[in-house]
Length: 194
Image (cartoon, rainbow, N blue to C red):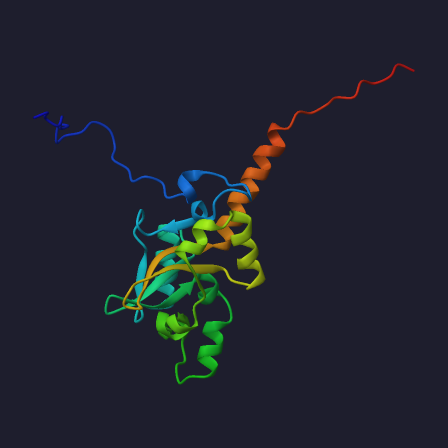
């Protein structure tokens, strides 16, 4: 049996966490598979928040983890989705106007999240056949900042498999376009002597 070489407990240098990045930091072209543009929860754990957490604390979590959306959980089930746009937009003000709450600090995630029943989703099998440009077009057409990717089980439940972010996908596509532009050969016109 081959032994596994272990490192000493007192490691030299610093220990840091890997940087979270879209598709392992890859830029994407519109023709790339759409599955490269999503956060796949089989490879990367989702970041979640409880309904009773304040929206200010939830926004701090988003900033700390470098994300713009959190899955909202209740009893280990997905109750909804909250985005930074939900927190920083009109929803908190609308909630205060229509409730007995008086202070922004009293608003909880559950008050302004998009509930599970109202979320838009695409099935994983359909996403596997799609291209990145098609996914972006769907997000733009439906005016969505985020889109759930689900797998339907035999007992009619939905496993939340991944999350697509329009801002991240736009950034990935823009990076690829910039790379292509930078790599394009440039012709220099010679000046004529006059």
